[in-house]
Length: 230
Image: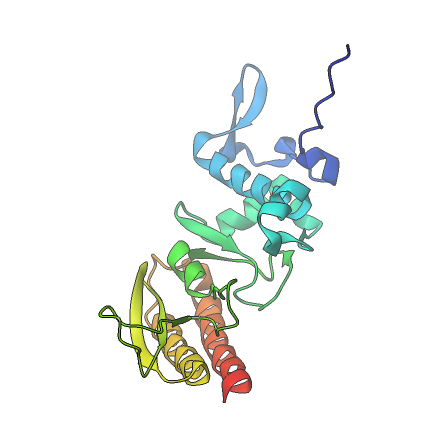
């Protein structure tokens, strides 16, 4: 009986991506057994490049993370040497994430114009999780009874994450009121972060871009919640 062939593993090479080590500057590589290889401190950039290639082309990855569907990488960055040069010129360092849609909300393309380096905290600040089990507004939870079993007059709780901790903002009588409060208070928090960015939050090269983008996100959030719940 013949063994069933395993499905071919994903490879960036099958999707037009080129690891052109020969075009990488000598200061970033060295010879290992007679062949060029990246120096250890630059390998993390290779893994970031490989990751965006996989996010944009691998069906299995997109099935697990649907937000990566319909995304793509610009032609320039399909060549590793170009991506490496851009990262090093734009303040890449360990602990920062490459983000494609902070500057341009809804952007689907990884490119030099759209991407910035930000911390995980800044990235998470702009994630709005809507309940999959209800039609409640983002950031709103329904709790009909209190801890003693009495029915609440204000059952709609507003909360969101601040510095990794879930913070209680308040309780409200209607979901619409709670949705408006969430938009207003979350936008205040985003603007506060925009006005108090530090080197830990983003690349110094991208300070102005990130600050402006955060303020735009805050304004868009208020406009959205007002259009939905006012």
